[in-house]
Image (cartoon, rainbow, N blue to C red):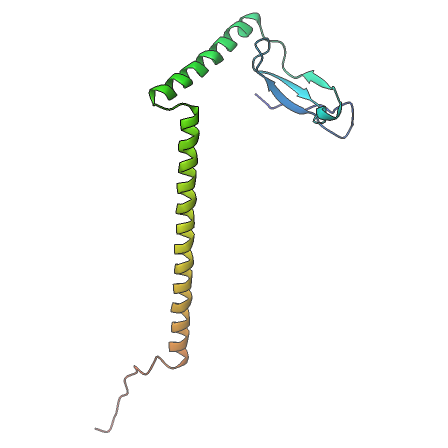
Length: 140
């Protein structure tokens, strides 16, 4: 299904409206366009999708409710409520930030070592190899 182009709003001919999906019981999943300046007093809105059939307006809200019930039940079976899950995710976020900081430190250390190695190679090259050249004496 192609994404529709939002219509222009009444309050400004150069401004497109925003497409939003309704999740009310009467219009579940039905898209409409609304002015992006709704907070400033514009009341433009128009349906993008045709009305849902009566069966859809009965079934979809029940299915959404069932999905939400199953998600809550799954969290309870996992031993987590929403607050526990948020806390766990915050802890995981802190651990990941620490890991990222450690990896950045390692990267900086490797960059430093690389620069030292390159400088050493340049110095050795510039001084003729550090005096480790073998001289061949043809007279003895």
